[in-house]
Length: 402
Image (spheres, helix red, strand yellow):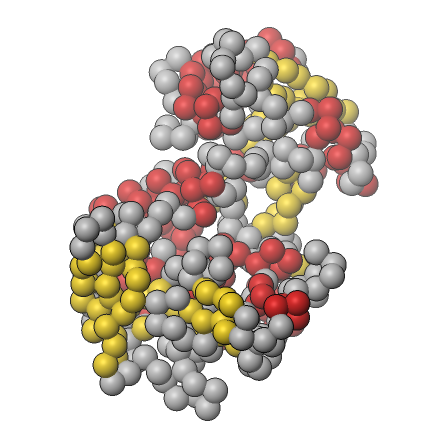
């Protein structure tokens, strides 16, 4: 997203990427802010930003910039043929194959949970061999929600178009089959025969990957269809990633994959370039401006050992949400309750208003380096349901600063 926003502003951009990133295995939704202090956000998610800690990335940017970033993503996706439902006055509640309703800010049009809340008769569909989607479990979980208890649910199992396989099939296998010329017609015919007349059909995300055929399926069925969020391997996330990659290629952004940055060339508070490791050599990439989006601990963007926590490329120290340095005792980095807000999850690089690393006193340490997303830190995406939202907003804003 940072590369795309910078390229749109006429900058010459090179992306150094170690892997495909979490986007490819995700839901394709952009969670803006689902919870604050363990309580579900009531009202517009952007209105809840003021209740977050001052060091939270959303507070650093402000409501208007977060809204601009969301609009930018909507515009990009629409241009690539992938419609996102815009934010509304409350979080959208998106159904999942676990029978839960997940709060999200932006989501694909194929995952419109509002249709479920309005329906009276709903078919919950799976395909034979797809172990991760069990309609009976989904329906039992749905019935925990008062708003869904009046719905007449029907379990439907379609025969697999793949026949017997040597392993359990996934939603991605089926989505690739639906990509074929005959795929969407198979799916439409099978649903017509098995579902009868319904107000809504709930499916795992199988409406294609390269060819997003959800609209075509709805037309063939003359019935609303909602794709439930699924576990990895992602299908909706792959669609979103493909959409963004296509947009980058149209802007002639250079993409270098399977590239690991191991250190930086820094002099007098200025980064002249970064060094990558290859199979048998190192390579230096120079740049006027650098945006770091290497992730937190899971992405190896942060490093930790007793007595020391630091960012991986520039060896910048990490601080706690309140600005203090973390304890040398690793047992202090987490809480006994696994669902609590853990210290390790909110560790952050201290930055200024332009997302540049700075000292405790506020002096800029690197004048042309900016941190975004999990590399920036300072928020607990798991308990807040804010991961992709913070990544989107900070990446977009960093690109406005370069």
